[in-house]
View 1 (spheres, rainbow, N blue to C red):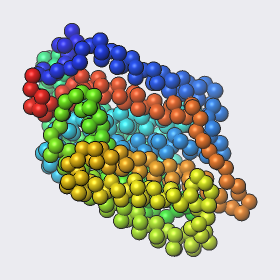
View 2 (view 1 turned 180 degrees about the vertical axis):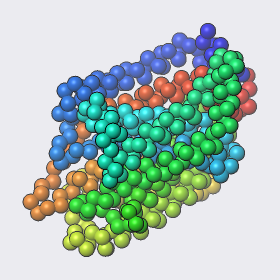
View 3 (view 1 turned 120 degrees about the vertical axis):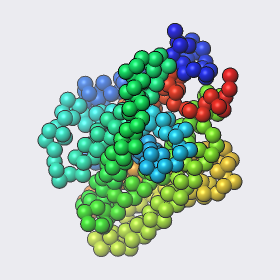
View 4 (view 1 turned 60 degrees about the vertical axis):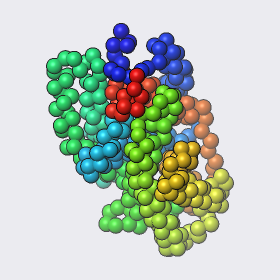
Length: 410
């Protein structure tokens, strides 16, 4: 029965070994579920969060995961709107990754709010003056868009596709995909930016506050650019990991090279604007409120090394690799560049949320350190194991890699 569900013309591992793999992934997943139940049943005092760190690990992970999921809308934009046809061979996989990332973001938020039964308040009692309201609406709507994009992949399963209605419905959705992708781009553009706009408008927190254009602080645009610079790298990274486990090539090198080159140019552009923004912030924005630059990095572990690591090691190095043809063609270097780029996103989101609140702003304020406990780590990593299960099931039973048959003939 299992073999009848596998896409025609491809080879998969025996069902017993696949079941063992899924069973292994479920072990850490259940640890995360226990952590989530503790938070919901006994409240957020099960974590190390406090009044000084109300955003903590979860919000940084949430913003990072959303940035990684930008590969879905941006690749869809490049494929259906810019018309880069080669990306048709990987756009399905970006949808799978996007569904995982945005489901993870919504799941983390459901734990972070402490009382998920009141999660609907943000929609019914919307604060129309808050950027977070826009974020909530856009993320929820874009997750629905991703689910709609994922439906045709399910309907193209070897057995489901035999029936007339699923086959016709899947074909119709494919015809509508450019319009669906355009809606996804619109929604993603604004929520990616608004996530950066939230710290950027905190005028009481000079470490995060930025001037900007009209109602949008510079962080609004920096978050958008950093997300679309990182998203393709995450797609490449997960594709290569999937190939490693599958022990076969799933996508041609030219497709990977296109994404890597585009990501490199976007990352380089982001770094230029990020450096200009930092210089202006230090010399003007923060200086005008009497906050010397050294005061923001006076408390460890938030020293100057944080800025050097974010911009230099996790920014400049991957940008150079991605923009150099010979380096891009070197698989270990390409993987390193993608890993550094993705790590840089998480570090940037950590800095703009956790570090922003950690820096004392009043003479009588004290610096308090924060270390996540096992509940926070288990629930934060839970989407990793759930995502691995979704990718495994999708790869086994759905035709998500159009070039697999060509690259791996039976």
